[in-house]
Length: 263
Ligand SMILES: Cc1cc2nc3c(=O)[nH]c(=O)nc-3n(C[C@H](O)[C@H](O)[C@H](O)COP(=O)(O)OP(=O)(O)OC[C@H]3O[C@@H](n4cnc5c(N)ncnc54)[C@H](O)[C@@H]3O)c2cc1C
Image (tube, rainbow, N blue to C red; front, side, top):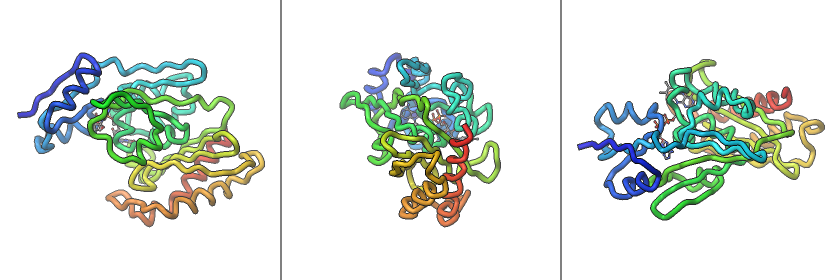
């Protein structure tokens, strides 16, 4: 029989995750709940983490700390996170954004991941082995994180740096991602480019240029990124073929750079 538990704190949630033979975590439930409701998920317990108080956004000393259960709708209106509004508003429609969480989006390889990768974000994970804080890039590079609860994501605000996001999908609104890209100026002449849909997992490209946007032609940054992405095995699914995704990668990166330059 399937049990549904709302733990009182993160320690209880981690213990439940460890004890049950086949547990699953639910944040906003926009992806997980339909599977569970269909009755064929194979899970033996659902751990609902929405009551753990992980839904706050704190900004201090130029660093944003966002709780994993923060709704995408909260991000979409947060004044100090205006650079994320475009990425947040690209996710689903208003009803989905009111339920969907930042943590769920990260686990679902959602559009926000492109932006968070470009911002060089770190994630905090709680599991039976303890608490770890790793870069989002490493989180995706290392693969799946069953057995861990993501509690927060943090990143330095891109104050004074150019940041842009672009999503390509079949329809403009409420449509699955084909490729999403975010670009952000990094330190020491690096341009960070986060990609979703370009490979099996969200990916971060480090494009090395000492000449930043003002003098460096955007098409060349784009060309360098596309050459790096050409090694990816872009996935084929019901929305696009891998070959089509490959062709769209430079287009979407170029649009994200254009957005960054327009700021
Ligand atoms: C109609 C529709 C449109 C959508 N459009 C978009 C879109 O345009 N762009 C997009 O990116 N996504 C889209 N989504 C997917 C989804 O709604 C979002 O990615 C959302 O942010 C997922 O968050 P959630 O809290 O609802 O996840 P849930 O359904 O609660 O969970 C999703 C997965 O993440 C895991 N999980 C959730 N939170 C945590 C946590 N804190 N720690 C560990 N594991 C966790 C769950 O176990 C599960 O495997 C859409 C979904 C629907 C139904």
